[in-house]
Length: 309
Image (cartoon, rainbow, N blue to C red; front, side):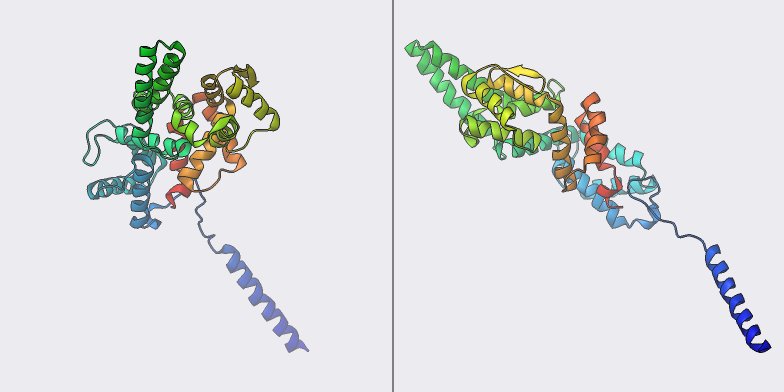
């Protein structure tokens, strides 16, 4: 009986020792997404290179050249993959005006890329010559109308020339800071290409909401918008008023909901997924104040999720 009790005590002592050893064992370090605790020594070089290449493709529309890849990868690794180093690379691709091999400059390539994906979203990627073709047709109609003394057709032709020409001119104007991304989106709705894709007022109204807000209008919104487009009737939407197609496009692209749609679209183009409700709220509070689309991109592109670190 005594030996049995001794065995029990011995077994309990062993179990206590094991538990104490386990409790003293060092807790394994973990890396959580989107913090600054990424260990650069645990991120393979191939992942850093993939991040660099993905930034080049998303921002300037091409893969990084061999020399660019080597330089930018080394800079990121030497900086410990810090958020500041990522921001510096993103800012260079967005803003640098120095001449580079493969592009006239990163800034020009960035704006061309942005212009192209905006046209893809709004006008099915129509080439610039599609807009200039409508300009040519309108110029011919203008000549005929002037010869015939038809002032109504003269006005219509001049309006068509302006609407389509302003789309093509918008790329350079936005790059030079003369217009905002809101204005260029408005122009990409107010032209003959968009009209051709979305024929008649019914389709135009539905498409404008879907393209900008990623939703269709409510019945009340549709009724108001339809009367504006179809009959030039004054209508109120999003806290403003419009009575023409041009005013309607401007009204939509200056609304608060435009910025929410911009966030959702940016997540889809850069992350390949929908933004969560919390992500929309977080970005919206900043975007509605500074209206800085480049900063919105920056905030997404520096994340560990995008980098896959």
